[in-house]
Picture 1: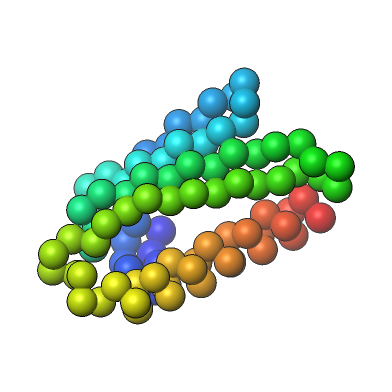
Picture 2: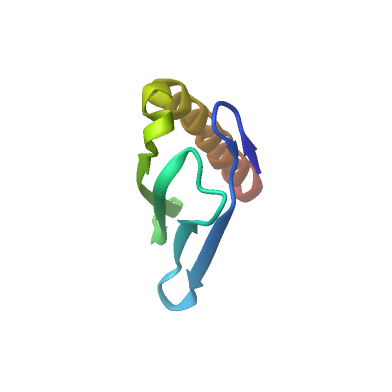
Length: 90
């Protein structure tokens, strides 16, 4: 996957079926991050399904100065992902 202002992103994901949890870890190539972990939890809700999302990451030294542009690119990408999920599930 290619994300604007970030580049190619490869993730390894584990889905835990029993509690509908996804754990994601960035795999090489790591740039522009020194590490990147993500957690997604899907929970039943009166109006459908609630998605809880958390990310923890740090940019590598070479890309620290570009942090604002990269965060904007990631945020835009995530909004698009959430819209696709919403469109799919209604």
